[in-house]
Length: 216
Image 1 (cartoon, rainbow, N blue to C red):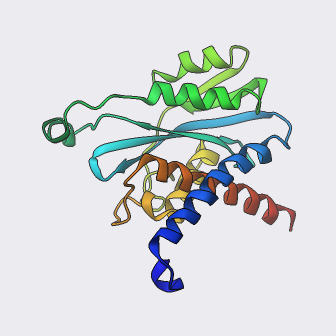
Image 2 (cartoon, helix red, strand yellow):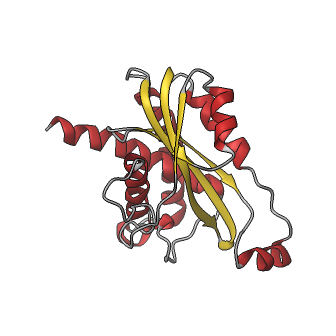
């Protein structure tokens, strides 16, 4: 952007920080203009900071049917699979902060979600306790995770009917719109704050643009 607009990179960074902080505030105000959501879907989208040995989890919640993004939380998580040993050897133990991230997100959602809402997620064993704690009157429905399609890079599923379609389609769209979320990319997140601000800008644009298209 600095090269194309003939600006200093510091100018772009300052503008990004300003827009990201403002977008986060406007996203919260935007969502308060709607009645409490009666059906929502949530799950984790995985990315990383600097290297795949330092993964991050983005817990995302959307309103079913409309795909309006209600909120998100970014948390660090330990590497898993073949990278786990390499990550521990190179960077040491890495805390799993996903429970704190879900608690932060669910606290923000309490004013945006109906007390008797239907909440859908996959069968992650850690989800039921958190949902019960923050939404004791809600109905929590869990579905078995399905194999991802090539298109959508894992979020879109190889099934005729996806019970978490609104969430998975939104995650796939975010991966397409945000270069840092594409699985094979040179555009990597260096700071967690940068990812949070970028997500705030993308979520606000997504909500406003999506609803505008539905009015046309």
